[in-house]
Image 1: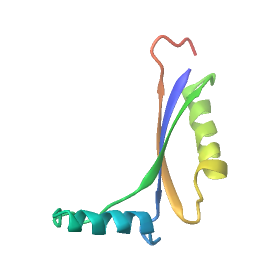
Image 2 (image 1 turned 60 degrees about the vertical axis):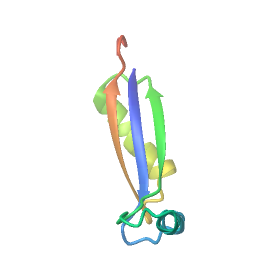
Image 3 (image 1 turned 90 degrees about the vertical axis):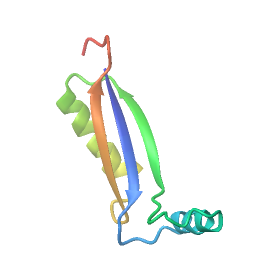
Length: 87
């Protein structure tokens, strides 16, 4: 078994209104030294795949087809074996 940790964020060229609102609010709170704010999505998946290569391929497909809008977002992920797993 493997654990996949996935982060999805807007591409730098895409305006993120939620991040902009947070950035402005931070300034109003006195935290005016914050240069940028990035808001994203975080996912964890547990996969029962035969190999780490198969798990990576599956996570890549899931990200492309479901978790990220590849026109507006980028994603990165790591896949690691779970302790005690026999796969």
